[in-house]
Image 1 (cartoon, rainbow, N blue to C red):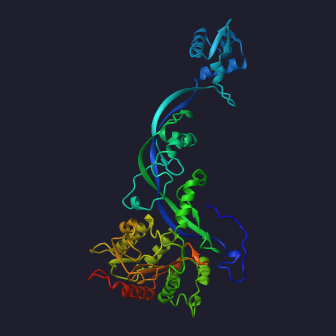
Image 2: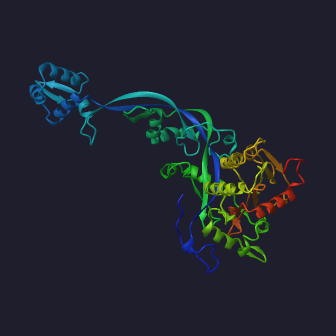
Image 3: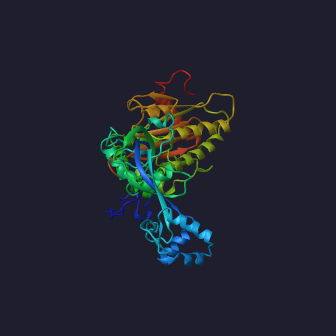
Length: 479
């Protein structure tokens, strides 16, 4: 959502990014499951429609000239006696007009056909309906169900305020149904063009099947304060729809806040040193005796994160590798890297950083699939499909991680810096990212690193990886 404008106290020379260079920076991406449930609702609708043209003209004439004589009405329209008798029957039969001493008057029902502010008369019929509608269990707002694949079903779930799915939720459904009636009616009556208004709602609803739907969340921050993250739900819904669902927005904010960690917990210094060891030439301008100056590199990376070229083999990366913009950059890196090899690599290796909810998105699977498919098209041959391996050192891997990679290897804490993420296609490309608070000792991890198709950087990364992987490597599993 939009950032709040607030004055900032800045110390000269200490800011991460000066005010004139401040900007929004996307940091991470997640897919989280929203708990939902179907509710059967009994309600009545008034279906509004237009009267026939002949009846409309007669009713409008009588409304304009109450008590008009029948023969004058016939003369006004040029009707024959037979025609005027037919039109009068159409109006008098349903009780819209009445005759008194040869003159025509609107009845109460006839007057009721003219709604306030409308010149044309309308008729309506009341219909009783009973249908099931899907609502989320947090904001009690409409949520359409769709099929979820195997990976989507094991994504992390937002906690519900009413785990039973009844009680307070069921009590709120009628009022929320009324609020969202126009949206729900359009879903239930596709193809019908008449106007519908809610007439009444039964206060008792029947809960039905539970289901879950994914919400895509992007986190972002200002470049001047990257560890103070905000959330963007625009991939999921429009701003005005999110405004009707504040409970969900709050739950997502808490989900994101739960990512907070300290730089010490993540061994940030070791992670940044790994970057320097992999690409010392690229990072030499930002390296001091004590290691990488992450603040200076952040400022540079934010201002010049761009696309790789033949003369720019290594590029800075800001934000998760799984953000759409970074996936495009990695695709370009992959394209260049595949030009440098003649034989397709057999494996994709990943090292997971020790942060909560790493890779909790279908984007991880999509990135691995992209690498596999592009490699197969560029270097065709009769060989097994590339396999993906993930080295994981933080307890039991989440189900979505296990479903994403072909194989998970649990390694010892300390084999790799807690903050370091690696994505390595031997001989082709490497991406190295450090996840740690930036500009504060505690906060949400800020992904910052590099991606490269430079053979020197790739070889260093492969050696670095194998030195730590060899203790777990089965014979023939890595190449």
